[in-house]
Length: 385
View 1: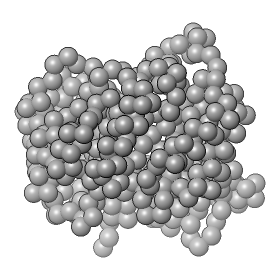
View 2 (view 1 turned 120 degrees about the horizontal axis):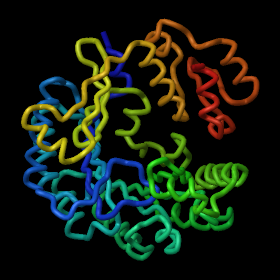
View 3 (view 1 turned 180 degrees about the horizontal axis):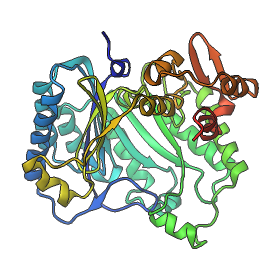
C-alpha cells in the first residue's frame, strides 16, 4: 500500500550555515565565521548521511538541495564526497535533481566547473536585485555587473540555472519593477523565484522598521499592484507561477521544493535544518540544533537533532493544506480527508468559491489568482483556530 508521503516524493536537504555577511532582511539560519574547518564539516555531513540512511533504507531519492547560508562557499571536494555518499546510501531517480544555492560574490568560473564535476546539476543564484542602489540597501556584497558575470558563468556550465529577485523594495515603483522584471526574464533560462520583501522580527530590517527608520516601503495597494504586475508579465513571457513566489517554464519546476509543497518526506541535515520523516507508518517533524558550535560536536554522539515531534493525522492534514494551497495545482481533498478523518468544511469551501477565492473541479481544490493575494485569509477560513 502506498504511504501518504510517497504522493509527494522523497528529498534530502543539506544546510551549510555560513555566509560572508548577514543580510539585513534575512531570517535564515546563517552565521559569519572567520575560520571554518572544512574537513570537520565534511566528516560531520558524512556521518549524518549514514545515520539518516539507516532510517530510510531503500527509498528512492528524488532530489537533493544544498541550501544555506551560502553553500557555494563549501569546498567543491566536500560537495563531491557528499554526493558520492548519497548515491551509495540511497537508490536515486534516474533524473535526480541536485541543486546548489550560490551568491554571485562567492563564485567564479573554476568553482562552478568544480561543482559541476562534483555532481551538481542545478544552480539557484541569490541575485536579489538588478539595481546597485538596492543591492547596497539589501546588504548584498555583489553589484549588478558581478551578478550578471556570475550568471553567465553558471549558465555556460549548467543546463538549469534559477535566480532569486526581491521586489516591493524601498521606493520601488511599478515602472521600476516592470523594467527590472523584463530584464530578468530576458536573462532567465527556465526558472525564477520572485519574493515580496517581508520584514521579519529579529532581523536588522525588523529592528529598523520597529523604530520607524525603514522608510519607502510600499503600502498594501502598491504591494498588490506589484504582485499582479509580476503575474501578468511572467505569464505573458512564458514563465507562469507554479507556486506563490516561483515561476518556471513547463517542466522546469524545482523538484526539491515540490516535495515540500506536495507534502512528501524529506531529510534535513545541518544546523537548523528541518525534516519530515515517515517511519513505521508514523510521521515525525525533525529539527536540528541551529548553532553551528552546538550541531557540529553533536555529530559524535548523535545529538544533532532536537527531540522529534510526532505529527497527528490532523497535524499532517493542516500542513498538507498549508503547503499544497501555495501551488497552482492545489490539493486533493480526498488526501486531506484520509489524513485527518474529516472533510474540509463544505460551507467554507462554497463560500470561498462563490467570492472567487477558490476553484473546485476534477477532485482538486485550487486557489484563484485573486485568492493568492490573500492566501493566509483563505487558509484561516478553511482551518479555523
